Image 1: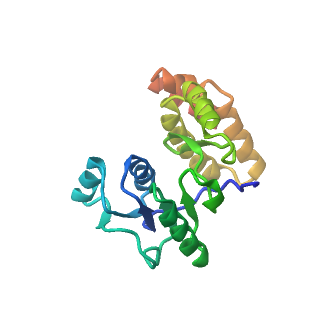
Image 2: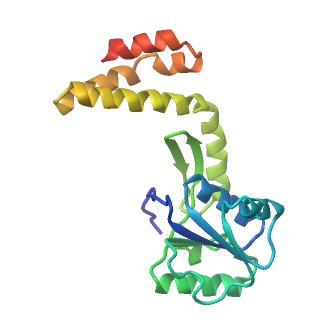
Length: 207
């Protein structure tokens, strides 16, 4: 299957996770990071999920999944060890045109979750289309060494610079050249070295 890579805005959107184990907790964490309104349905929960619920960061339903539980959901993730429940939830999602991922069952997924590196606004996703998640994780570890935490600050610099460029230049080509000047400069090295004054000077010179 050829998957279409897509980033989805889940801010404030209802996302249902069926299952309360460690895998479900990892999926919940990534959804919360995107600002989703998360609801978890399970008869058992990890301490981490209980803590998040106590803090008001998600809603939990302490019971087994049942038909209709996906009503109003923008996205569904199914992470139980019960194949019958997994398939039933998948079919409900499909019938209601809700994107669904059944963990470790690619044949019951309308989308797959890539291995992700997140550095502020920078998101790098790696996928093998479900054929070998271990390879995607291996590549992610390699890329994490290349794209360190400094890229979060670098993206902040570029975002502000882009706004100023848009205000200064009317022509798209002029804007592109200005952005290229900064990206091709040593700005990332200055961010990494935390040389604030030199970075400010570099930004001005690239304008």
